Length: 433
Image (cartoon, rainbow, N blue to C red; front, side):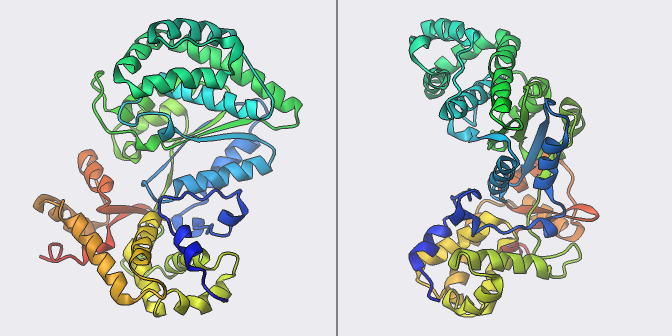
């Protein structure tokens, strides 16, 4: 069997999210649950599947950006659809400005995506509330929307797209919608979600599920209310996000898990957020996690030879790397961060055709290390050295800084969370001082 270099190059694109329901992407998917400390997607699925029919659920999902959350949510979507649910999945970052998000923005985005998904299967709804909303909002945004001639999703999109492109118009829209949030929420429930669910049930579906991805990417900026944006959205306004009359899964910023607002967040939603940690390459005691490294190797070789078993592809490593130890080195250097791993591999493929040499990989690792170390202060090096010894972390601001910069990764085992520094940084001369 010969390696197809072009297909391998495309499969290693770190910006690509696997859509597990597509046969090609399904061949690339690796289940890391047994080394990540739990079957999180199965837990989300069981909560939706096994509750009484007609009961809505709201669940929270988080993890480090780039650790594979979107791929796992695509897997959840595929499995729920296989079980008979109508699932609406969308990436909020495609329609919202992550630097400036409000609850009404999220509610309108959900209404638009649900209605668009329903229209695609010939279920068309024209709620009376939105007819009035389009008329009033269209007047002051100078964006006339004729409801009789336009689908609900297109009407919402026409208004929200214009508001997204203009901070001034977005502010005006919020000033109009904010005192009407309860009415908007009620209209979405009574005039959209409940009729939609009834029609879906008549069509043989078990229910409606909405998966809102990428909300974990909202900026940690200070809102005029005095709250930071993640806390404002999910804690102060979380009760409104929790009132949609269908199954909902939101991604939330990881920083909320380690802040003093976690208790209030859990109270708002009635559930604890599910956290997707990194794939361990080391254990808490600094010994090697052989199973984690093997699964990462399996992931790389599945991209090189899709559809080929690990038993077979493991014998083809020298078509991809100059030797087996180079593949192991790549997996260890990634720290179990899936986008990091693909990013390093993609840079290698940009430099040379397979088999990738150890020299090329070390060059890419040095380049990445230099990029990271240029931004690290001496105080931060001290924090990293301490964390390397303790494997624990406390402190909201420090955590935010180190995690968002990808200096520190989180892992989970039977004893709970533990932390380690990015392996690439461990080899820097500044760390060993």
